[in-house]
Length: 264
View 1 (cartoon, rainbow, N blue to C red):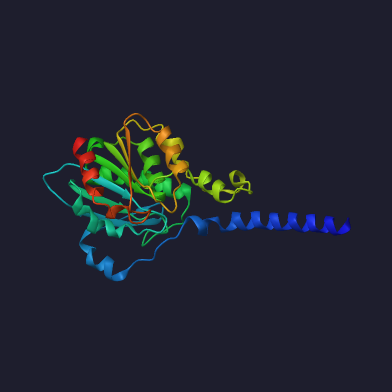
View 2 (spheres, one colour):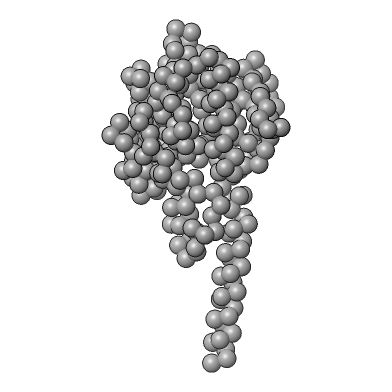
């Protein structure tokens, strides 16, 4: 009997320590801020933009594409993504320009990564862009990829826009973590739930979701939960033969995005 009690106590202690570890390690599991890549940054330095918010620096790029178009994409990247690469991808879109600002703590943007800082930063970026470049809501398309899809959805629910494009989106980090760590009280441990599903229901503008059938990170249920909570003006397209980080390699990827942009 004493042996069994000791085993139970040991299991309880181990479980408690595991919960503590999950709580304190979650920032590293959710956020993977990339450091600036010197040669890449230098190659697009002519597009560089910076501004300050509450003594923190926000750093990114404004890329001109086609002066005959009137749409501007504001882009938010994934959990390990430096948005500098949108400088090269932007030319594929039927837009006037793209604006991509790294999240707090990413690239040369200062601050600490968190759900709160990401969401707040998105509102600040939008307000800055509208004021500085004299943009109208009907000219703005918000685009977010992976973790950035939650940021983009939050922004779209709180500001007026023409349309929203979500690349490899998910319903919430809480739901994803609950599936991966089934025996832990994720709801009470998680500091960054990123509840995309909560905000998607508030969006009145057209929404395009692009997802990979064989996504290694976002499960079918996480995608379906999000889509089921989206409005009637939402469209979901799923591609085969590509994954979470390679979806843009599908032959129809840019064509579908441009069809959506042209219809706005």
